[in-house]
Structures are given as structure tokens and as C-alpha cells.
Image (cartoon, rainbow, N blue to C red; front, side):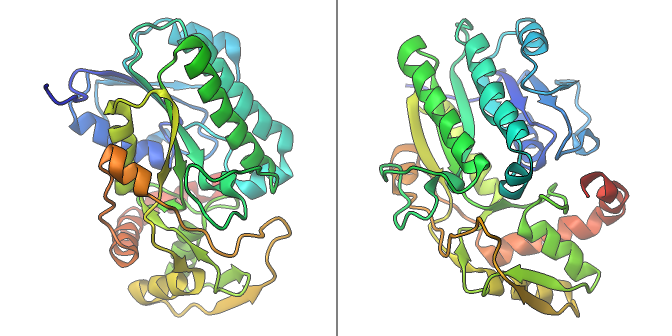
Amino acid sequence: MEKATLKNARVLVTGGAGFIGNNLVRKLLSENVSKILIMDNQSSGMSVFLPNDPRIVFVGMDIDKMDKLNFVINQHEFDYVFHLAAHFANQNSVDHPFSDIQTNIVGTVGLLEILKSHKSLQKFVYASSSCVYGTAEQMDENTFIYPSETPYSINKYTAELYTQYYAHLFHVPTVSIRIFNTYGPYELAGKYRNVIPNFIEKALNNEDLIITGTGKETRDFTYVDDLIDLMISAALGPNKDGEIFNGGTGTKTEILKMSEIIKEATGSLSNIIFKPARAWDKVKDRVSDTSKSASELGYQPKVNIEEGLQKTIKWYKENYDKVKSLKNYFE
């Protein structure tokens, strides 16, 4: 049996101008897809970073606007959909819970509702989050979870359930990837952004690196190329009944160690400062069990934290002028 590929595939990427989206789009182009429709409201990403390629069609829009969503999608046929658009992330959802519901639940349901009639669809890949595990000690796909720490964790889990509902009742071929602390090129620093780009920017400017907690807390930092490989494997794999896969590395890294690697790699004079943990953040250790992703999708993350941070810092330095010009946009 011939191995499935993305050659000549027609692809929709929601949130395609974001950090993960930019990396995914580049990988899809290298796989010789025939068309990529990108939907993004640029709330946390910028189309300026997207490659200039005639196969890309960009539509600036909010994912929860059903009329426009319906109009745009029904002009096309898609073989694969990667649903990355999200109201990111935990603190943002605490500050703006209704916006989180609109994007992460209403937007996802609207997309699935429209796509249920698209017979060409081979796979709908939903970008979920490790936040759904909350404070669970074991983080594998069979762990019973009941997230309630933040609106973001609640809503990402709710959207997972909807992907299963549409798979079981309407046979929409869906899979969900629970993403663990992914980092890499094209991720910008900002108020609601992740710790790594914020630390890189501060380190380059010799500003204090502020750790909220003791620094002994651990996270499963995953380089974006590894995550993209997993997402494409999930798209091409046989799983389509709402199944869930972890997208981490299975290795935990202390926040303090991560910050020290960044300091050394940038030659920074920054001080590391400790402040109390945020009220909603109760997770001391977060690490994925990737055994299911490995056994069913052949997933083998290749990039360790030291190598991944070096690659990310290199990109940040090379693009610093452009990043700096966009900085106020994300404040």
C-alpha cells in the first residue's frame, strides 16, 4: 500500500499566521501541497512573517463569525484542516473569559458544523493544549481529567469533546493533539505570550528574567519542528474518530534551568528574579506521556532543549529588527 502524502493536498490552516501556524505552513509548502487557505485575525500572529508563495491565500477574520466563516469555507474544498486558531492563553482567558469562549468553543463548533458536509475532508487536526491535564500527576491520553483552573483549560477541553461529538455522530474525521509548551522561531514576546520568547527578548536586552514561583517547577518544552511532524503524522494517519495524542517530549525541564540556558546562550547580563506564582497556576510539574503518539503515529521528538533554544535564539537575533517593530502590537 502506497504511503499517504500531502502532495497536491488542499489545506485549511486556521491561526496560520501565528507562531505554530507559520512553521506548519512552511512545512506544508515543502510537502508540495497545492493550496493553503489561511484564516487569522492576527491577534497573536502576523501575516508579515508568512512566506510569499502563490499557493497561499490569506483571509483576515475572526473564527467565531459564522456567516463569514461559512461563506469563505464553502468556496473551497479541503483535504486537510489544521485548526490552530485560539484565544491564547491562560492569563488572557482569566482576563477575558467571554472572548475565550467565543474563539475556543464557538469558533471550533462553527468550523466543525460547516465541515461536516465536506465529503473531501480526510482529516481535521485540532490543536488542543496540555492545560487540559490541570494538576494531574499522570499525563497520558487515558487520564481522567476535569479541568477548571482557567477558562482556557476548560474551553480547550470542551472543544476536544466537540471534535469527538462530530466524529462520532457526523463522521467528521477528527484527531486532537495536546500541545505541551511548544517554542521556536516566529513566536514573539508579549504580555500573554509564552515564557521562552519573553525570556529571550529580555535576555538580549539584559533585563531581569522574572520567574513566578520557585524556579523548580518543570515543563515539557517541545521544539516546534517536532510538534509539526506529529501533527502531519496525525493528519496522514488512520485515526479519525476523535482520538487524542500528546505532543510533548516526555522530558521535563526546570524553569530555572531553562532561564539559565537562555542567559548563557545569549551572553546576557540579566538577573533572575523570583516572584510569587500566579493565583491560577497550581501546576508544579508537567510532562507528557508520548507512548501512544510513538506507537500509533511513529512520533519521535528529535530536538532537545539546549539545541532548540539555540535555534530559537538564532532566529530571534536574525529577525530582531522586525520583531522589535511589532513589539507594541503585543503589549
